[in-house]
Amino acid sequence: MLKVSILSIGDEICIGQVLNSNAQWIAEKCTEIGTEVIFHLTVGDNKQRLIESLKFLEKSSDLIIMTGGLGPTSDDITKPILVDYFGDKLVFNEEVNADIVEFFRIREREISKMSLSQAEVPSKCRVIRNKLGTAPGMVFFEKERYYISLPGVPYEMKEMMETSVIPMLIEEIERRHESVVKYKTIYTSGIPESNLAELIGNEREFLKEGETLAYLPSTKGVRLRIGVPGPDFSSCDERLYEIEKTLISKISNFVLPLENKELTDTVCELLKTKKKTLAVAESCTGGMLGAEITSVSGASEFFIGGEITYSNWAKSARLNVQEKTLLEFGAVSEQTACEMAENVRKIFNTDFGISITGIAGPTGGSPEKPVGTVWIGLSSQEKTYAKKFVFGGNRNINRERAVYTALNELKKALVE
Image (cartoon, rainbow, N blue to C red; front, side, top):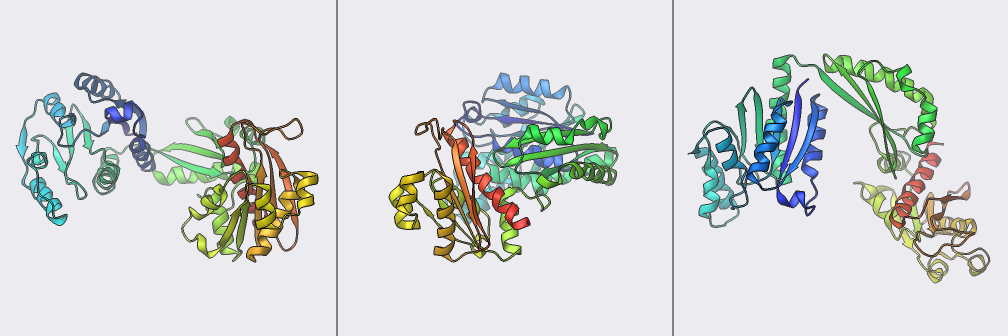
């Protein structure tokens, strides 16, 4: 199995100024084609530490993918260090120079001497041309392994990975007749990780040697990732199908009905397929539910609108919640949640109305209604109901859980 390590270079990543999304994306793409990602390392703009990192990764990697440090400024040290590391020298590359000239011509900008210096590349490398920027990628084959250096700019790196690096890795896997590992994810909702594990039981009873099952919980639900090694993708697919059938027989009530779809995408696809419309009424989530739904392209087909009614006055004035309901039962109550859901459905003339009202925290709780208490209402033409949930003490997590719990309630209604 081809072993890949990812080396991210840059002070901005080390000090937390920039999120290292490049490494996550590269690892995902490498895993999709059956390689084994064995290390993620992040190193600052420091020559000695970069060299030490390369020496460490060499011991167990077939291929090292580096990102960052290829710009034209003094803090971009990757290219000169690789030149020293491999005992190489810089040479002028006409194709890279032409790419840089064209890059500036299209943008009607004057070319700086510093930018033109990027046309000098190590003589031992194979250049990966950069169609979206000025820093070329570089591929070295030294010490019986590949070293690939790519720009840190995400959209430049991704284009090079997809058009050059990934095809190269696939070719290398086939040339070496390497075994592969393939993964499949099952998406669930409406059940905590521990309860899901109890339903599944001892996975060693249905998994073979080397096969894995991982639980990946989040506020959206729990993802189950199955991993299967094999001589080729076809045999892995067959085995993944067998394991998936076993798991679904145990947890079918909680598996999202659309394959490879997370909760939000599933709900939106169901609304679209069933030609149902939706409106939302939010209090403690302050518009997060509406934002989550409209993050999906095409949401205008089924999402009509909503109301953010944070105060009692707004609930009464905008959603027609009765004042006596608010006085007798309070804003965070079954009765208020039901009226919010039913009234927003009627106001927007939709098939479904969802409401969220709760105490996000960290203040505002009481013995009867502690922080984290949330009522979620759902209304259709057939019925209106509300359910109580107590999530915990963290404000942000409470708001996220409320959003995805509301979506899960709608998912169940759509499936039923």
